[in-house]
Length: 207
Image (spheres, rainbow, N blue to C red):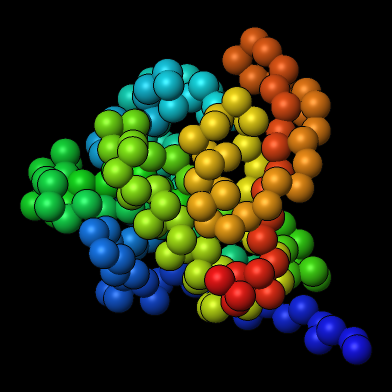
């Protein structure tokens, strides 16, 4: 029996989530914004965060520019486009001082292959909030959005296999380890491998 052809629901614009964010048990997920610079810098600058992701070491000014650049990416239309959801802990005050909750991490969706409805998910969180399930809670909500709103056929994650915390998160999300490629990127003075995890829409629905 033939499978239906993939048909992502594009364009996808995060503007709809400015006024109606995703609410999870403990978090508010909304589009990353310019006002999140201070909160994001608190984890963007940490060596333990930079160790496993291909972000260069930045000054505070460079970090602010990087956050504003990501915040400006609000529409997914073609391969390579990405959007970012700030993960807000409403019970803690933002370092920006605007009275809002604190951004403790962010989750990305990037369109890898529109023709095959393949979407990449990625995340970064402040290590002070590790071990409490926040990353799982937020990533699970964004993964669900990828399947139920964008109508993805497959969602995958790419990570440094030494990042065992992210590998474990992939498995909690129901993703399978699909393989590891050796020394695929050079960053911070060393070669790093890339581990690939993925989950299909049929597997997501079965969960």
